[in-house]
Structure formats: structure tokens, C-alpha cells
Length: 273
Picture 1 (cartoon, one colour):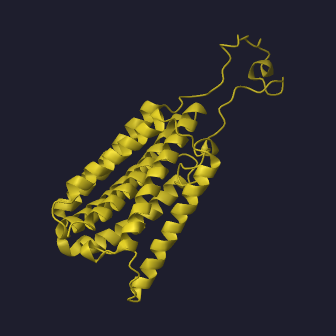
Picture 2 (tube, one colour):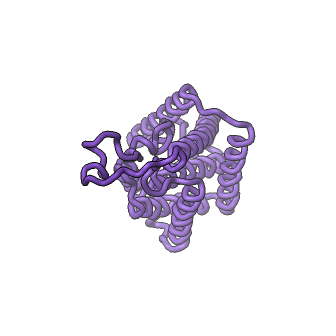
């Protein structure tokens, strides 16, 4: 529920076609329909699934491909896009990314091409945002990237070694917090169009306790969303979701990682001056 793509416990199974053996009965038995003798199976030979299923290796590989594409496009945007185009690219790619991820994630079967299109669009967004922050705060990018992956790694380690259980209440809290944060950002954007400053999002030394507090809450929510992502992937693997669902997992994790990076980038900028 926190991550709209894979945050719910049935994120993978609700989009998948049932993996089932032949129903019992002459009307549905393909052998008896043609007068053939039905073969017998031991309990260990009974066919249960059809086709390959999602594995952890699949998820890791697809996530690496997706995040790698985001990184490559972001690097190209960072070095090649002129300064005058950073803001237009930032805004256009942010809108396009939201539309793309909504369309791709709502399909019955996630298209690898659709995921890669999202990765390219998100790469433009990340590259433009990164270039802007680096222009204002030189040298901030490398620590932000490092902090993002260290945070994600620590989160995964804590999830596994401390056996964190994602309960329905846990998901509900993360969902409500994320929705409240999104509405807060949206309200701030609308008010800023009318020249009203709320202090929710500031830059550098202009940031007050409210902006810093909001950013800390955002980072915490992004980390909690990663935990729900890990849990959803484990549930998908246990439920033997189709192998194609590994692209859905990669998409969801990439969305959360980009969110975490942007929030860490912003919170680090508050202390540069």
C-alpha cells in the first residue's frame, strides 16, 4: 500500500493469471476428451505451475538493469543538458514519469519495454535534479548517491537479520504517511504558484526547522516503503508469481530508490551553507 506498484501483499498475484493444473472431471480432462488414458502422477509429480516463476535472482537482475539505465541516462543528462534547459527537463520528465509509471504498473503483465521507457524518463529527471543541486551546492552529488545506496543496504540487512514483519497495520501507517506527505508537497506547489511560501521546501541556509523536519520524515517514509517492497517481493516469490512479474518488482524498487535519493539530496543541501 505504501508503494502503489508493489506495496500491497498481493501486488504480484493480483495481476497474474492463475497457475493451475487441469481441473478434475471428464468435461475438463484433455486426455478423456480424446479417449486417451489419463496418466497417473505421484504427489511429487503432480503438475502445479505452468511456466517459469519469479525468483530472487530475476528480481535482482531486472532491478540492476532498471537502476543502471536510470543512472546512465542521468549521467548523460547531467553532462550534456545546458543549464538553461534544466528546469524544463526537470518539470517535463517529472510529469512524464508519473504518467508512465501509472500506465505501465496498471497493465496485467508489465512490459519490459514499458519499464525501460520509465527508466529513461526517470533518468532525465534524476539527471536534471542532480545537475541543479550540484550547480548550487558543488560536490553534493557523490555523498548523496553513496548515502542512498548505504541506506538501502542497511535497510535490507535490518529487514533480513532482525526479521522485520510487515503487518497490515505497518502498511497502513506507511500508506497514510506517504499520502499525507504527497498532499503536503502538492499543496506547497499550488501555493508557491501564487507566491506564497510555506517553508515546507526551502534551499540551503533558508531552510528552517519545518523544512528539515519534513525532509527527515520523507526519508523515513522512503525507508519504510523499501521494507514493504522487500516484503512484497518475498510474498511474490513464495506465491510462485510468473517470472514476468520480476519486472514489476524492479519497477517498484526503482521508484522507491529514486524517491529516497531525491529526499537525501534535498536534506543534505540544507546543511551545506
